Length: 441
Image 1: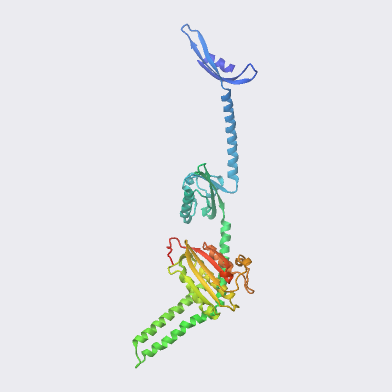
Image 2: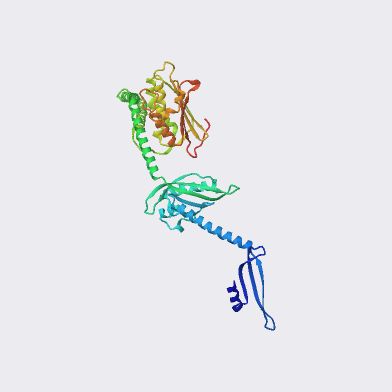
């Protein structure tokens, strides 16, 4: 302070300095000293000044500096954690614009940071995933509710890998989103495992379809033989009406029409068998569920008659549209009906299977009930487990495959006791196709 005071006396017309003054109690307090030089008309120089107690201000400044230092240290440690954790972390503004990303993310995508901030982050995704990702993210931001989203992200070397994007909103006291925080987790290995599992299930489902087709061979042959014999009969009739002296073109035309009708019937049966037997990848498409069910029941008509089983069908008169693989859904119906038929093989009472298909609140509900031996109540959940069977010669895969197919189509399946505790009741639901109109029955 003395050095500054001497300097200002010699070279300046004012002085400003800080220092500590000891009070009468022996304690030192910080003061602010401000002085100014004045020269009167006679050239006499005087200095006037004031000492202001700034102890509280000084303490506040010291505390602020310490807080800033602690904050910088905390930020440094946080950056180290965020940039070294084995995950890609990010944050977005309340309206969904990317504002922060850790080093792992920027190194992985290999894009300049200025290209992915804001809504530029969409360029990281596979072209086929950009629009679904945009729709999902817009919905999450609008609803303020987090949900995981899967998409493919391009690595710096150009390879795409599957990632799961998870996010969580930071809310203010009023429930408004202040900021979104999230991570991007590599799930490529999981996706490959899921695809391998789906392929294995598809292969196993094909095997069970072929097994069922083999078991129904006699009945199927009977179903095909009927229209073929009708074709032969009608062809003979047609020829008789075309012979000289017995010519009746109208009767011949009617017989020819019956030939065409029966030919189409035989062709439809063969087409259904071929579709069930072929090993094709799943075809997810808009499907009218009603004719798909009727095709299965047409194949089973002879088998059910041979077993002395009466079948009743309760189905809506209007189209029932679902999105899925037609053959897989037919396999579910086939397995359930055949299970019911086998459950009544040794029954001495009336054998009856009832199939009901209804639409309730955008869900298709399909139930298959029978008058067979039923399923013990303690086994209702276990019957869908792989390799668990209530039949002595069963391998326990039919219902397990049914559950896999139904759940893959966004539905659920369960078993329960039949009405009045008789027989068994199997029910599965499927979501209606988006935009499908629900009609009253």
